Image (cartoon, helix red, strand yellow):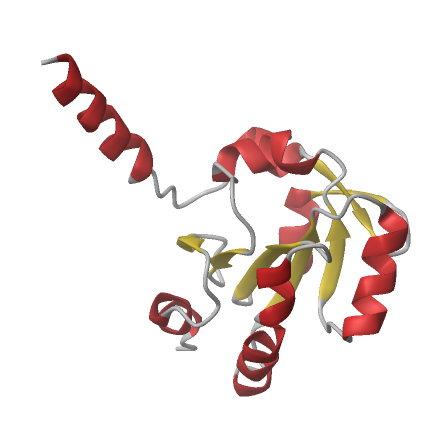
Length: 160
């Protein structure tokens, strides 16, 4: 009986796919490439009215780097989609150098609180890369994808 309860709890937690970001996640501060603090809510506000692909990555993440060609292809095929990159790099200097070296085009922010901050906890962030898609109305249409080639990402990005 106890095992059945644990399985049920795991399924409920594992299926957690919210349609909106929590107040705490929206309030978390990130660092812009110009070294300004900005809340996640203001990042979303900047892209309001557009589909957004959020890519949580780091320059030390092998999978993140290996999938960049696929991500860049998606960018070319979806010019109306806004791309927001949130970095879990160990230092701001490495993060900024990696953006330039890898020629990653989009809106870039450093996750000052890392995966243990309110935003990371909201996502249940344990693996990167991690992709989230937000629609034109601020609704989360894809909460959890770890492969940029996922058909779910392409489906969520489809422009109406």
